[in-house]
Amino acid sequence: MTCAILAGGQSKRMGRDKVTVEINRKALINLVYDKAKEVFQDIIIISNNHKTIQGIEAPIMRDIMPARSPSVGIVSALVYASNPYVFVLACDMPFLSTDALKYMVNEVAGEDIIIPRTKWGFEPLHAIYNRSCMAPLFRLIEQNRFKVTDLLPFVKTRELGEAPCFFKEGTSVFANINTVNDLEMLETA
View 1 (tube, helix red, strand yellow):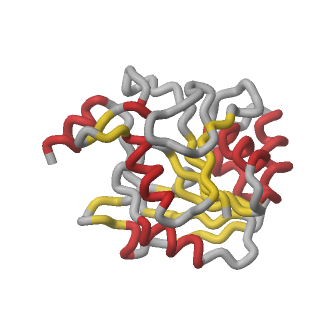
View 2: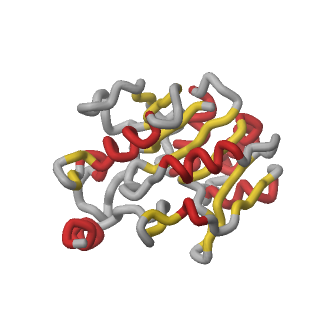
View 3: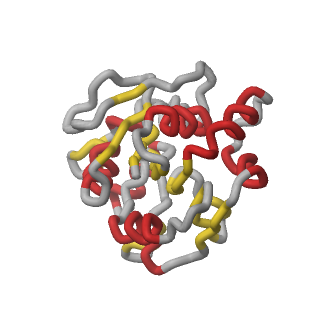
């Protein structure tokens, strides 16, 4: 399985590149990358914004299409991956846990997508995608349908409900940093 960290977002709500935002003197993407390294040997970064990232030894690949959306990042990861499954992660999840990653990897049983579903909805940027998702993703992108969950009716999906490993010290591992306010709350916690 390949792990792909999506790091090509525009960071509009943050007002600056989220990849390089520091938490406890460590860039946000490095927190995600370091956790991913504990589980995956094959890691790629998908980003149009960076040629190199300090502390990241994984190859940085560009989106294969000009539209900027998580769907394009996911299909790009599937194209570049050397394995049939890709665990897609957002670069802005500081509470990521190796237990949650391992749990999900162990839940793969031939489905096209393995995706957590919490009371807040699906978590498409902490999910596992099979290369079989490429054709339907391309079709959706061509139709300007960029919502990742639009893919679910077209593929064999395994939903994972709430699990203890999806929480780290009471905080969801899916929590992400979108705004300066999110960052300030995290730093004061």
